[in-house]
Image (cartoon, rainbow, N blue to C red; front, side, top):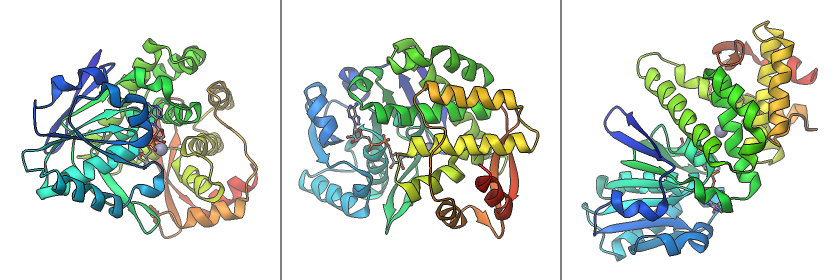
Length: 341
Ligand SMILES: NC(=O)c1ccc[n+]([C@@H]2O[C@H](COP(=O)([O-])OP(=O)(O)OC[C@H]3O[C@@H](n4cnc5c(N)ncnc54)[C@H](O)[C@@H]3O)[C@@H](O)[C@H]2O)c1
Ligand SMILES: [Zn+2]
């Protein structure tokens, strides 16, 4: 097991990588605990939960709303939850985002922790202290910054995860390597097949290095404005492609990373050879690198990007594998670039 302490602005969080759901009771009070999970995770793992009252929600991005938060508040009231109640979210990014939001707002905030059960939530959603819900179709529109006391990243839970969900996590791991860590990139290159076979040692390194990279970028942002934008690598085009085609987030981010890497080549920041290393790695991880889509629709979605400032978009490029820079790129240049691809 590997342990990482993350020091946030107000609180600290302990990330436990390779710890087991079965040991959850070691990290929580012996009474007055409420668990929040979703239907699928409950079907697989309720047998391993400590014996506390459990709120079970549905699945899917469409339930990450204030309405669901309202239903959870209602159940907490019915259970007579108090300010002293400890809440644990057991599930993927949706359960964790909702749990963090509810725990931060119920009675002005109660203590909480997570057991992350998807690779995406282990490498991304559980670090950075963002909790929130969607509002009127806008993603993560309403939320709070607040750190869970602990996050258990149980790698054994990934055995039941559908492969598509696993790949979403891989896309974010590759992103972390590309923006900050050349050694991690080489490690992924050498271990792609083992990762797909859920090798424990390989996954432990993926989660550990991702948590270290994400938390160090987030911490630096407290001083250096804009640094956090680097975590958006591949996501400008990625979000636009996800919105217009409906493909899973990780697949869209994979395509977005290819486009961002291609723009980095045009700007002479990245060699052709390194570009090919990137596409080869994504393919080896079963992630897409090409897709037919309506380019005009993608550009229309991209123009609605909330990070846009006038005609310019803060765009993350890579300056060789393992280094990133933020550049202001015009919408016209992005249009030319996507059209020639
Ligand atoms: N807070 C953040 O910083 C942050 C960062 C990235 C993503 N997110 C959010 O995370 C959400 C996506 O998270 P996700 O990809 O984990 O999705 P998810 O929570 O919807 O989980 C994906 C699916 O896998 C199922 N599942 C979960 N664990 C399982 C397991 N061990 N075995 C079998 N099935 C399992 C779930 O029931 C669900 O159907 C999005 O809403 C996104 O906005 C938040
Ligand atoms: Zn992402």
